[in-house]
Image 1 (cartoon, one colour):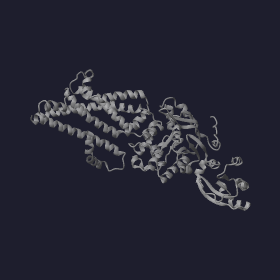
Image 2: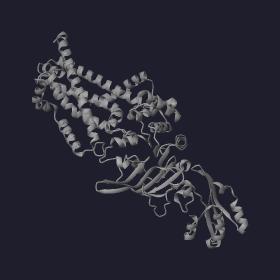
Image 3: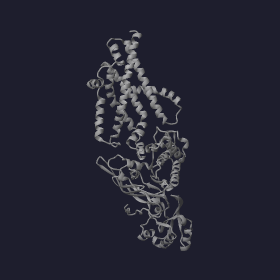
Image 4: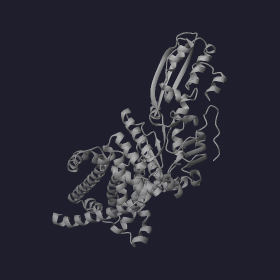
Length: 366
Length: 246
């Protein structure tokens, strides 16, 4: 596989730490043609999802998220580029023409997918819905119902096996959708806005379920969403999509450590306006160990400066304890190089707000 | 004419009508269902997209549908003779009836199948299902209530067509009404025929609506038990009957 070409401002995808990429797309492009007009939905997308992680792709509607996730199991044929899932080049299996050949269909049956609108068959009971993928795989009747009941138990709906989808709430329907997606023992689960049609509380419980499944079964989850909260609560890694491109990507801690990261700022917003003209505003991000050190009081004592805290928050992002604080130091940036250097030495992520970043600072951050 | 004279005539005519309509409905469903599904599949964006095939099938269906039945019946005479060996009698009438009803039913099937949520098709594809799986597990079962309503509509239309077939010697209720009611001024017999037709059509419409409704309800909200549904369907169906027959 050729190494991905890092675009300016895009952190190189981390493949090093733990695990191999399970889903890889390279140079994925999708162009829709209708009546002579061309719309580019995907514009050279390189995505790397590692085994066992929850990977969130976030973007506004029209950013190309939906096309991306549909290209991963080739429900949409990419115009160019390749998709590799679990070591198998799906684009090579696709063949020509819109119809999916046997090999591609087999590969698809090993990729689970859940949908925003659940897509359950209304004429089948919950159990029969979960059995559907097994029917397609040709599993015997007894084995089918055993497996379906086991999966319904796993998602907490064992008592609803004989109900029809219309008798269930949205959250329950999505649980059925998840159980169905797991029926073929997939290694990879694709989630297409799975929580977007649900209320906040149900969203949390479905995300929790996805997280549990990810942990228990070692399931790799690729999800697309337009809700930052989804990424915040369950994703290990995330990518931001805009106009068919991935603008930023990386693990959550990498993103938080990236200066000026839009995703990090959105995942973890801090507000606060500077009070005086002659001051420097700095965002301090704590992760893990650093969060426990009394750095701000150390800073004040060491350099004898007055620090105002404009805003602060502590939260868990992707299972990681993160704190962020916006502080105001007296004097221009040039006067504060030394205190800022001190903060960096403490292993903190420092972003100077509202200022053209000197090259030196960017260098220091990397 | 006394009732004892009318009775054997009528029962034979009823039986003939049901015989013709029954067989032609069966053939229309067997022929029209795949045709209707094919119209959806071959359409732009369909699973078997094929613009040429779609246009050709669509055109055949349109022409056959817009043909007045009485003309179709006469035009098909040679074809009918080659199949049944005759052009007279109820067997012979089944041929044009079925051929007239196939495109009619196919269009209704097309409409019903188009109503199926594309997301369901996508879901089955994502499980590794092929086109045949999609048809068998999604398109047909999910549109079944509509398909049953379409069948009802087709049966009612065929009862109408079968009366026309009566004019060329097919027998049946239409034949009775014309020969006795129109040609011999046996007004009583004619009115009885009309009444029988009205009853038959109402019963079929009611049965069809009930079947479609109970299938639909199965996936519907947690409604009352099946027996209660029967009552409810009975109360609300006359309005639906009128609109559909009309």
